[in-house]
Image (cartoon, rainbow, N blue to C red; front, side, top):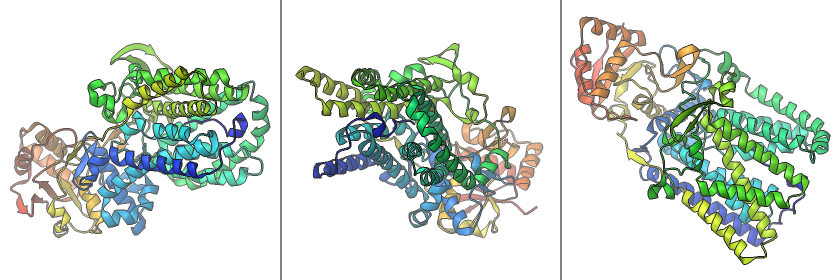
Length: 608
């Protein structure tokens, strides 16, 4: 996500020195960032262990599992990027999933201390705070003189509709603090005498970003490439760009070398390792940004609370634009006002920002244009790029996330200009104030929707499972673990973070091979036993059970090496309610009568 080069290149006023007033502004921005983060996530803070994000409890369970597994792998000397704890017997390549390895390692002590759900909440909240503070640092120390301008721009970017939408359990996409650090690191490469040190630091930062949010790193690199190309080709900047190019390329080479060494194994796993796949398991036609969504309001905002929100996104976590018409109009007004008073060098920056915003807006529309929920059939540029490696693994709608920082920068630049040279007419100043208020107030976020979820059963929490499953043995909940039924990984996360030992599970919520044309899919290919259980739990109807289905189901359990089949009194369905009674009757028809142990129904499967 782009920004302008350093202030020196554009020749605006130098940054104001640190003063008492400046430090007070820094403190106010920090407090606002914390208050907004706690406000947005407040529903989870009520009870971190037993509440979940209502619209995306499956991803929450996945990230909790990743934190628990990452800490366990670190403390037990296991591979943090490949595991056989889920999807037995094949295992899962976490390098092609969102492994958040750095977070898992850094926060491992906290995970062991307070558990994976609470640690998940801490990281989610800190992500939002750190994103605001990182953008504020970049703006206030490098780009604008007014700290008010920096605060408005930074808080808008950190709590823009797309960031709030991804706060619905996405620890990777809410790590927006990485972007301003990457941006500043790239522009620092052109400083004479600093290319080696800058290249090393940027290479380390790239490796960290890859482990936390690889897709976000890819988008940032794309945006910077577009911005730099547009900036360097502008007539006012060509000579400067040409002079800086040798130093910049040396620094970029060091960055590539350092990042390549650090990421050699993860990249090999990603592109050539076992259980890899091409593309993604999500349809780019569905996960494209509706053109009308740019002028719509998000649901978790003041405007949404007033009934002005829409359902133009494929799901509530993907409201990646949703700026509202007033903000779009304000952005255009800011751009025009800045352009009119800009020197040629600053116009190069503005032009590059505008081109970047337009390019990523159009790409976010996906392969075919959609307006207000209806596909027009118009082929768009992403349809040409979709078959390229790496690009085919990206969801086009998320490319709209690049536009928010561009808007935030334009807002900050405009406020900075207005404070340095206030309008002479009182009416003009009032118009700007009203414009900012009309554009930004409706977008103020409201808390995420949360709901209760069943606690981890006592059978797991008390460690009773160890009496029925040998070390490294296989246990499966009913229904089997998937994105829509994530209990198995929640239980496993509890056992790992409470040092109970390991049990493995068949299936799981992950991306793996098995989709059409070599693409990925969620979970493994279905088998007889899990298909019957899914049908019973989802529909509440016991499927017809025959001698053939009994034999196939028991063969599935032998294939997985399952020693215990467990049905709790309450099953958490991430997308729909689960019928526990239908599950128990179906499992009884297939496996015989269960026994009651603690608060679960248990079927013991004899060793093969």
